Image 1 (cartoon, rainbow, N blue to C red):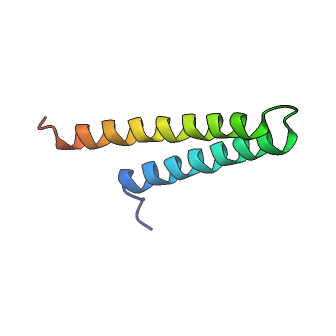
Image 2 (cartoon, one colour):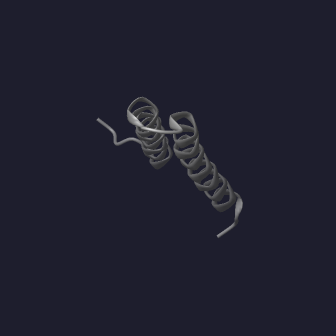
Length: 66
C-alpha cells in the first residue's frame, strides 16, 4: 500500500484540529458557568483563525518558487 501524499495528511490534521476545537467550544458552551455562548464562540473563532492562517501560509508557500 502506497503512503498518503503530504497534502492529504495535512488535510487530516487540519480536520482533526477543527473537530478538537469544536469539541472544546461545545464543552465550554455546555459546562460553562457564565457567558457560555461567548466563550464557545471565542474558542471556535480562535480555532478557525488558526486554521485560516495556517492554510494561507501553506498556499503562499506552495505558490513560491524554491
